Length: 195
Image (cartoon, rainbow, N blue to C red):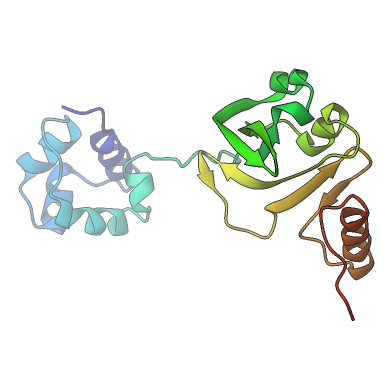
């Protein structure tokens, strides 16, 4: 038999109410032998009678099964995803995450090796900032993960990382966004819009 303690709980609650096995059996419409088997853990009550037992003893079904839900706070981590050109970043960045995919891409007239890089390091965009070459802009995004699943909330964010600043894409301050666009334009990564 399983280690369910329902028999112990039935016996404990029956005695608290000062009921005999026979009295309890009569109240539930079962035989005295059935109650005896439950309490000795030779069998379990039929599932259809469990709510009646819980109600009789003024307990929840969880209490009847002696079950306690343990609260565990979610372990939430930010997972950062960046496409890095190996020519634009110091290889020491590999100490802070994992290269998931690698490919060779042509940009203009040059070829470059790019990796899809994933890290759960706190403040990874700021760590990346220390290892990129001057004048380089790298974009990526973060997702929040708890217990291996992505949390769909307003926290995931896109980042633009350059040697001078880490810009967060999901920002509500219009001046912040204008300054971000201005810097990208000055670096040649974005074109100014004409009014």
